[in-house]
Amino acid sequence: MSGIIDSHVHCYPQEVIADPQSWAETMGERHWSELHVPGPGHKSIAGWANPEQMLADMDSAGIERAILLGWYWEKQETCDQQNLWHAEWVKAHPDRFTAFAAVQPMAGDTAFEALLRAIDMGLKGIGEMLPPAQGFSHTNPTWLQILQWAQEEGLPLTIHVTEAAGHDYPGKVDTPLEEYQWLARQFPELKIILAHWGGGLPFYELNSTCRKIFKNVYYDTAASPLLYHKKVFRVVADIVGADKILFGSDYPLRLYPKKEKLPGFERFLQEVDTAGLRENEKEKILGGNARKLLGIS
Image (cartoon, rainbow, N blue to C red):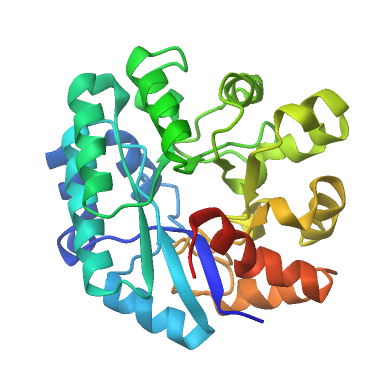
């Protein structure tokens, strides 16, 4: 098997890790703070890792490359800051990191221009986005401009999807699934990656109309152990095919909070290995699909 690629990770510099709540307050990122530093009565499953720690954990688990995703920030200034972090880390470790760009369409032309600069700095995609949390709709003019441009440039877009049914948690934001169907219909050649198993959307590919619309839609497995039984791998592979599934962990989220105090990759990879997938399917999910989608040699 070729090297493993994790298509959904997040990373922060030490200045954020040292005091995430104060950093978020300074930047005006209340939603991020609610998710990562919940208030009294709620235990956080957020883990923390700077690039050095992430690389050490990747080495330990045998992960060749990680795709650094941006966040669905409320402020374009925070997007700009994260894009600079990503560009720096990719430059320092081009054989280990690929990065996507964060953007806030509510900033209008400023956002689009900042996205162009981020791609010029070497970032290879857009996301992770979440329109409801960022305060814009799919008909936002700047968002439509970004989507059209990404489609023309062949850039992949990762969008967060919250499952319609399941457990509740501080900061949870509903994401109407029909809006992603609309998105796929309006931009049929756009490479869309729906995070967290698409919130259940793979099931709808059993419908012939949806299957046609979702021909360029992929699903990543981020945070899977927190959401679904490992049977989800076999079930979704049977519905949409292994070619459309990307391994993603959501590192440094602690996926097994009752069993681990620190984030890691090994336990989740063991789960994938015992999820009933054939070897050729695991080859695709654990790296082959990401190589093809992102043009990684």
